[in-house]
Length: 121
Image (cartoon, rainbow, N blue to C red; front, top):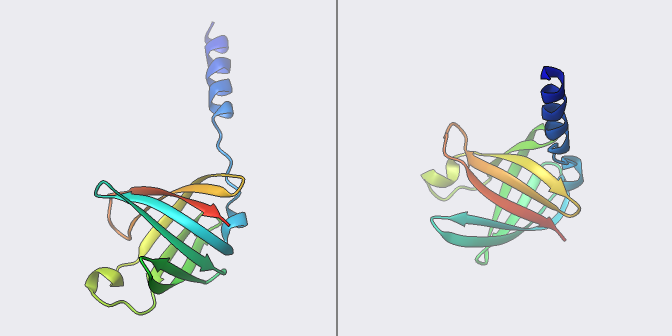
């Protein structure tokens, strides 16, 4: 009986493995959606392996990207305008599907996570 329960549990876990083809999203043009304080925020950006140029509300910012591994990276604003923009952001790609990925992010060292999705154009 224990073997049957163990086999069933392993089957459930293996079926739940989510696809993560993160390298498909290291370069290109994208749109992003996140929710912050109950508000839906959208932006567009273009990135290569080390630079991301983002357009949010017609304000353009440039970030450096430091890849920790294929699915995690750190963003740092190249020209921060205030103390909040100086904080680095840790991004982790949670899963991918075709031209979309879901991610979590937080300021480096902050335990509070936010979530969003990105679509490759």
